Image (tube, rainbow, N blue to C red; front, side):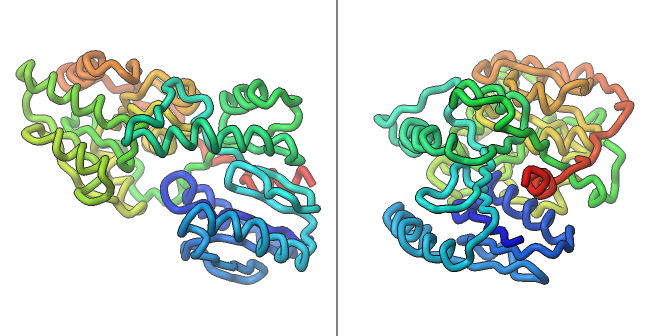
Length: 356
C-alpha cells in the first residue's frame, strides 16, 4: 500500500512533536507499505521503506504555501497515486482524488478567550482563530476520518462540525516511559516551580508572573520559577523577561527532551495554559509521579483524570494561583501514585491503518 503523509506546517512545539512521534511509529512498524512524508524541516530522514521529501520554501509566506499546494503537491499526488493520504496539519489536502485521513490537534476554535486583530500581540492568534479555523471547518468534513488526541476535543469537534460520532477517533498521546532512566520523583518538598513552554500568549506566563509578584509581596521567600524561554526568542519572550525583573524567575531557554525529565523529577510543574488539545508536560509529569498545579480546563482534567498530586486554579486568576503555590511550599502534601501513566497500547499510525 502507498501512503502519503503531509505535514509542511510542523515547525516547533506540538506540531513538531506530532510529526516526530508519527514518523517513529511508522519506522518501528517495519511494514511493507511504501511511505512518503512531505515536510518542510529537517527533523526526519529517509529510511528503509520511508521516503522524505523536504520543501523548505513553502514556509517563506502564505503565497509560497498556496502555490505549492495548488500546483506542486497535486503533481506529487497524481504521480504517486497513493492508496491513502494522511494530513497531520488539521485539514485535508484540497482538490485531490484520494482517500484522506486528518489529524486534528488545533483547539483555537474552542478557546475561552477571543483574540483581537486590533491588538498587535494577539493579531496572529486572532487570524488563526477567526480565519484559519473557519477554513478547517469548511474542509474537515470532506476527510474520510478525523483523529484527535482527547475525548473533550472529539465532543467539541463533533458539535462544531455537526458530524457523526463514528467519524472521529480518539488516539491518546503516548508518553515514552521506556526512555526515562530515573523514575523516582524527588520533588516532594521542592521549592522550585517549572513551566516548560515557549513564549506564546495562550501559554499564559503572565498569570505566573503576577502570582509570583503576589507571593513576594506577601513575604514568601526561598522559591524559584523556571521558564524555558530566553531573550530574543520572540517579542513576547522579551516582554515576559522585562516584566519579570526583580522576581525570582530564571530563564533557562529551551531544554533537550532527554534532560527535561530531570526537571520533572525535582520540581513542581506549573501548567497555566488555557489553549491545548492535550497538555503533554502534564502527562509527562504525571508519568514520573510529580506534583502539578494546573489550569482548570477540560484538557487538564482529562490528562490528569484520577491523579491525586494535582491542584487546579482558574487560568486567569493570579491570586488563586499564588495561594496554590504558597500552599505547596508551606504544607507540601504528596500521595505516592498507585500506578504510573501507562504507555499507550496503540499508536496513531496503527489506528489509522486499522481504519483502512
